[in-house]
Image (cartoon, rainbow, N blue to C red; front, side, top):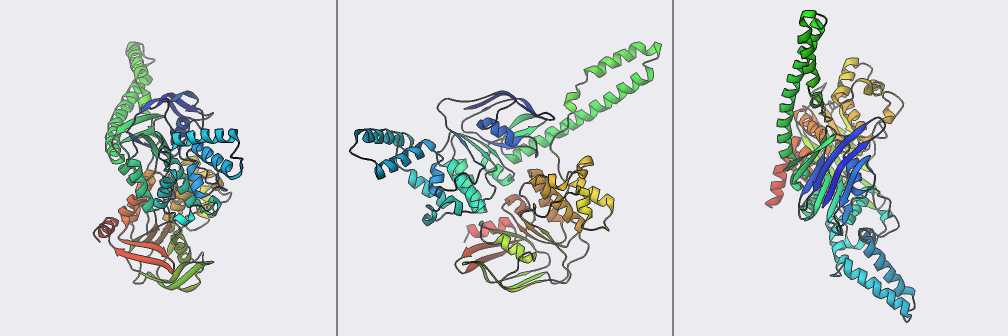
Length: 535
């Protein structure tokens, strides 16, 4: 269906990948994975035709439709929500809008007008033979959480997360033969992610998707494409299947690498010692030929690096952790909390879940004292030293300092080696530690915030969407760190693998007319899902 032949992408100072050859087959759903910076999004943009490769060709079989998830959330501000979705089929959209305009203002007795209406009707029948586009669009939008009475609202009235949902509906609506999705689960709540999984599993064309959601990749993908070593390797199965296979391959490669490095060192040592010795000259020449034949290309290092996250505590938690008593908070006429109460106990590691816009971030801001509630009391225990990870780190991680200086400013008493070590754990090594904070990418800002929390050694962590911008390896490391952590946790996340790794209490928030309704479940996320299934 879609063919990539000898695709290479080179920049002035860096080569992302070279001579990639792959045929994307109908019925296969490919998960494209790789380290941050490996070139995943670049490769997807080359497949879509958005950018041109340095070398090679992309070809799409004749007559097939290509669907690409747009990343521009503000491209359709003056369209209604349902029209923005209809734009997923531009030919159908244009025909319908021209028909509406002609019927509204043209002279219907004019033969040319009627001729044009006939042409437009043919286009509509070709693109929508069952005349079901409105019903299909309405169903998709409802599944994504948009009430029917909002479908005519303008896109400009939506939040960023809801705009992204509309873009997702837009690319799914025309049912393209080849579907290219870059991070489609970003900004989606758990219910929307589950819906998307089921929708994509029914896709009978070709799918290529980039995602940092391990559960999503396991659920959706039939094949994994691993972008590493400047090339693309294809594996059958989902992410977990790839992980097992790639771990085995990596161990075999490490053994081969160590063997060749040892052989190289022995040959170089012999040549160095006996190269000038006449009686050993022939042997030295022979050793040099052996050294020249060594395939050093196979010694290349993977671009994938695993961070090492570890949260320690300075002080043990006492008997009282957090009490929330009858807090209320509103944004204008929208009531978020109305006499909301909650008690957090020692040992609680809480996953705070719920639909976008339900108030999870508002609660985190109130608990972190960056937002004042309208009424009620928030009381932290006397022993609690809380560390806060906001959803948007850009306002905190800023300035002209180097990474080392930025971390040093929070606590002058911390040992310099400890700061360097924490940066190294989060994959900032050597010269990278001296780069300016303001030059960091979104993912790098999240990693330095995690380094800050590791240094602070708080006994309670309040984390609002910490997995945004993190790659799979970092998310797995974060889940393991929270599981091993001896302090308390409240973490907002839509990543089910992360939640499943650490949480022993699930708090789900649902918004009603009278404020938030809470479901408080003491147990793991898997147990929580089971309890909902059997109700």
